[in-house]
Each structure stands twice: as structure tokens, then as C-alpha cells.
Length: 450
Image (tube, rainbow, N blue to C red):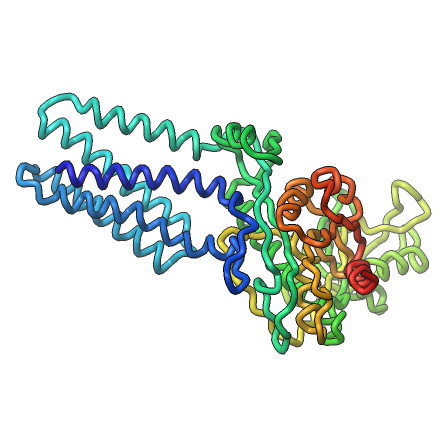
């Protein structure tokens, strides 16, 4: 019985240590192992160590199961611990992408483990289970401090990742060292206040009232990562002389002004392809035609795509509130692009890189590097952050001070950032060679000149 209890306690201690390790996972960076494997890649292998928790509880329940004094109720509880533990181990090893299910199974087996301890003490020793109840309360308090979110958001450094290891383009040669850089941005827990006093670059802010649920936010950043990968591949191939890049392909309606002529005729998501039989491929085309050819009150034949169908809508133009002589439809728009990527790109999946578009500029550079004979890094250790837009511009990102701090630990030769973030990066890492850029061409030109 005592031996089984020791395994129960060992599993509990390991669980607490794993939670702490997950919150401080950035500290070992910028560790690089043999063969160029970075810390962010090693984390994927450490993930399987989560199995140690249910393995301990499985062994503990097995040892306690064969105690001759066990009642039917205790046998059933211990069998339940074993089943939940085995399920958690199976998910960890064979369905690693089901992290939420894994955590639920670990929590269930842990809860059943405590039920076993409390009921055993009450039945077998015929007394109030103060010891087991006290252990349960302590465990709940510790895990709550480590895991229950507060009404504050915390941003802190994460780690770098070599984007020439993250992405491999068809027919591309192995590239140089080009690091993207991550930050962690999540709901803060009580323990983060302590971490913020012990470690640098922790920033706390109130969570906005309109913040979406965590599941929605997770889905959004994953989608943004996918889109960033696709745009980066298209832009990079165009720069390397392969494909046409991001080709304008109409004007997507993103929102409709209430009470405007468009409200009953157009829908958000519609793609405008033409006005009065004139082809429209970009927002500039749309604005130019409305400015030069249409007056308020005129009717315009609008060719659109909607859910795969091609439609024509008769649209009266209204007068702009800012300039009554200018014709408008009352819509918010963006240029729709068609990405031309003749070569396939294989992307690695890192558990610590959930999503987001901030690696876009450096990913573009990495793919160019692989497709350029001799590469573009000239032996330098390159790092950077910033989105990549369809026109090749480098867009603003958040967490720049934390990213600059993370890069400074790697001794990179240069850290490229969006121009607007240059001052913040230099203040956070004064000894780092920070270069503000506006486009991917600015990066390529700097590398060529230096």
C-alpha cells in the first residue's frame, strides 16, 4: 500500500514540475544541439515525458489494487485510475495533437487518484481522512496558482527557431542560419507575478473585455500562421524567379456600412471582379474607376463572385460624407490575391510554435535563401521579425522588446524589425545590431551591401 502511495505522490510532484517547466520553457534557449537542432525542436521530444505522470499513477493504482484489504468500491476506483492513466499514455504517444484531450485525461486520473487516497484513509483506517484531504487542498492551491488564469495578459520572451529547418522548399538547397523569434502571450496566472520578478521582460496588461475565448483565439493564430506560410512562399518564389508571387485577383468586401446602397445588394465576403464590364483586380482599380467614371447617383453594374457563383448586381452610387462629389458604395475592401507557388514547401510542426504571422518576413528570406545558389546570408547569423504582406512589405508585430531580448541571447549578427519597431528593439537590446526595414527588398539589399 505504501509503495503504491509513493508512486501516486511521485506522479503529483512530476505534474507540478511539468506545469512550471511549461511556463518557463523559454529559459534554456538559445540552446543548440549537435546537427543544428534548436531548443524549440527538442521540446517536441520532451513532450512525451508527460507520460511519466499517468505512468506513476498507473503503477500506484496497480500496486494498491492487489491489497488484500481493499473493498469493492476501492477496487473499482483503482481500476478507473488505471483506465484513465492508460488512455492518457495512449493519447500522449499516438495522438499528440490532441493536447486538450490529454490534459483532460491526466486531470481525470489525478482526480481519481485523490479519491482513492481519501476513501482508502476513511475506510481502511476508519478515521477522518485529514492527511489525504490536506494533500488534496495543497495540490489544488499549488496547481491553481500555476494554472488558473487571472484577468491579466502576460507577454514574455520565448525562443528563436531556424526557419531553414522549419521550412524546406522543393529543389532548394540547405540554407544558412535565419532565425524567426517567438514570444508567449497568454492569460497570466498568479505564479507569473513571481516569474516577472525573477526574470526580465515580463509585461502585464489587462485583458480586453471583447477578448475572444481561448479556443477561438487559438484557431485564429493557427489560421494566421497558415496564411503567413502561403504568402511567404509565394513572395519568396517570385523573388527567386519562380512563379508570379501574389497576383491581385479582385477586391474582397470585408464589411458593409449600415444604411449604404450596398447593404441590401452586396455581402461581406463577395469578391468584385468588374465594374461596367471593366476588369477590377485591386483596390486601386476600384478607387480609380469610382473616382474618374462614376458620380453620386449613377448606377454601376458590379460583377462579383459569391460562394463560387458569378453574379451581376446593379449598384447605385452614393455620395461620400467627406466629399459629396465623390461616389462610394459604402463598403470596406481589400485586394484579394491569388498565390502562385510552383514549388512545394514542407513545413515542420513545433508544439511551441502554435501560430501567428510574425515569422512571415524571415520565412520569406529563408525560402529565398534556399532557392538562391550560394544563399543570401553570406555566413551571417540572421534574425528578424515582421509579417510579410502580398506586396512584399514587412508589417508590424507585437512583443518586439521581448523578441529583441530573446535574439540578443543568440548573438545574432543582425536583427531585422519593421521600421516602426526599431526604437523599441534598440531600447530592449542596446548591444544588438537592429535594422529597421520596410520591405523584403530592404532586407536583401542590406545583406548584399554588408
